[in-house]
Amino acid sequence: MTTSAAWIPRIIEPQLKEALSGPLRKVVILYGARQTGKTTLAHHLLDSMEGRRILRVNADLDPMQEVFSSRNLHTLRLFLADYDLVFIDEAQRIPDIGINLKIIHDELPEVRLFVTGSSSLELANHTFEPLTGRTLTWWLYPLSADELARAYGTMTYHTRLAEWMIFGSYPEIVRTPGRQMKIRLLKELTEAYLYKDVLELASLRNSQQLRQLLRLLAFQSGSEVSWHELGQKLGMASATVQRYVDLLEKAFVIKVVSSYSRNLRKEVSKKKKVFFLDTGIRNALIDQFAPLESRTDVGILWENYLFIERTKWLHNHMQYANQYFWRLHSGAELDYVEEQDGALHAYEFKFNKRRAKPPKSWQEAYPEADFQLIHKDNYLPFLLGNGASS
Image (cartoon, rainbow, N blue to C red):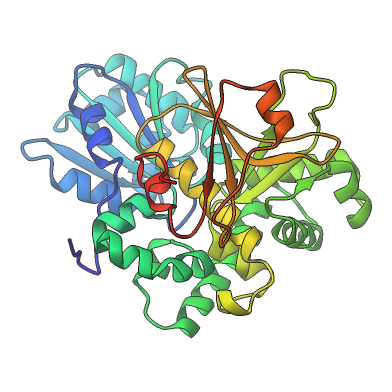
């Protein structure tokens, strides 16, 4: 299958459409970092909903801000009388949006609500408390391996694997031809979003500390990290490091993973791993866009790429699983452990290696768990949802 340059279908679109049309009436919220395609997806979805009377609201326009921050049922009813579906893009920019959405949801039962926001932190501060029990939430990540394989064909996706690992999969980056322009756009995105927006979002003043922390995390992607050790390197309190990391996770920059443990004395339980939601962003932070064959961090990239693509697949297909790594104080470790429906699945990620066995200590502690090595020749089923082949 091929696709146009303008539109790559998103897997969650049918789920959103069902949520806006089905019998369960909830406020549908779509979160995601800037430039992941939220607005494009929303308008593509709304264009397909024939027969619906849709109001599309740009939250940046002053008249819209006045209406949707009014807290006035009469004003809201008068303004929305001709519509049965209201879409508000970047809803967090409207003052008191949460309480106004609650009024519409509770008092105007004929109206469905669909809103987007660039940050779970930013939008949650305005919506979650007044909308408790009234929402269905989705996250839109950069394009997933599954979406790229469907759009371009599995073989083409596979032949471009190095490209996805190096430049990531933000929609604009994917559609942009040419290495230099991809690098330029990634640098622009990193500066505009990671630094400026996250600092503003969290009311942080020390941009240099945030830059230094992000670079350290990028170099240590997939390695165990300690907030205390990071703080020592940066001259920051560990509590400050933890706060910054929490903000970066809520702003869809990174994902923090804990170690798996059933409280066995030998298992490490306090340290974390940090992965970037996009490997292109990770590479932009350390100014490293060299081809895979000349890199010393291919293993780091591979682990980050596999982890985050698996995360996307689980979310996009509404598969609920706990994600961990595993390590003993002796050094025995596994890159990835997935716990789903009570079953344990252990994985080792090696780009070139073809054979591996799980640590004996893992087998002894968790004999019921299965194990698979994921390498560059068998990774496709793991990322496309069919398990992994040996």
